Structures are given as C-alpha cells and as structure tokens.
Length: 171
Image (cartoon, rainbow, N blue to C red; front, top):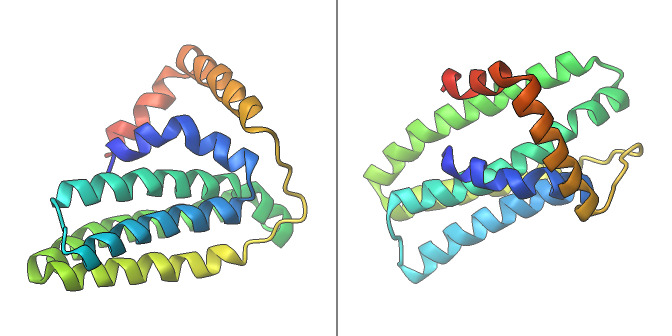
C-alpha cells in the first residue's frame, strides 16, 4: 500500500493539475476496479501483494486529486481549508485501515467474493467523486506540472526535511 503511492508520486500531482479532479479520481477508481474485475472474470487472481500494489498505486493517484480539491471545496463550500482537509483525511485513513483489515478477512473468506466487495467499494467511491464540480478549478499543462513538481520537491528536500520524514514515521 505504500510502494504504489510512492511510485505514483511522479505522475499523480501533474495529473491532478492537468485534468479535472473528478476525472482523475473517477479514472483511478475505474482502473482499480477494472484490474479487480479482470482478475475476477479470468480466474487469474494472482497474489494479494499484486492487488495491494495496484490498489496502492491508483489510490495514490486518487489521493493526490482528492487533496488538490481541498482548497477548491473550501472555497465552494465556504468552510476553512483546515476543516475540509481534516474531514477528508480522517475519512481516508479510516477507510484505508478498515479496508486493509476487512479486505484481508474477505480474501481469507473467499477470494472471489472479496474481489466483488472491493470492486463494489471502488465503484461506490467513484459515484460521489463524479459529482465534484469546481467552477474555480484552474488547469495547467502536464509538462508544466511535472516541472513544478520537480522544483517543489527539491525545495522540500532542502528546506523541510523533518516534514518529509514525519509522514513515513507516522506509518
């Protein structure tokens, strides 16, 4: 679950800047569901680690779009960025931890039924994401977003190394 988001880091931010947030969120959930559906209908279930990697990869992309939507939602709703960020972060962490636990139980109970439950959760998550419309959403080119990501990453590494270490230490 952590290797996927780390690998997605290079493209998740630029995707969130180049495309509408709802498209990135729905797209990442659709690819994750499609991967699980493929495994289910072909009876090629592979290893649980492969599913964790793929789900983690596309959850990383989803999470970048979700977090990029926080200031837009705060402006749209009239609430503070802090309140919106806290709400989506708590729900995301509870969902991830609950999903890891119950996903493991479902995989032990019945791999096929566990996949169906997972697919249902991803599809159900895409429904509210589809309705996230932000009139103030500003998009930029993917190439410019990649350049900004590289420059911002270098700045973070040299200016805020403790901030970068705090999140991995949390897990």
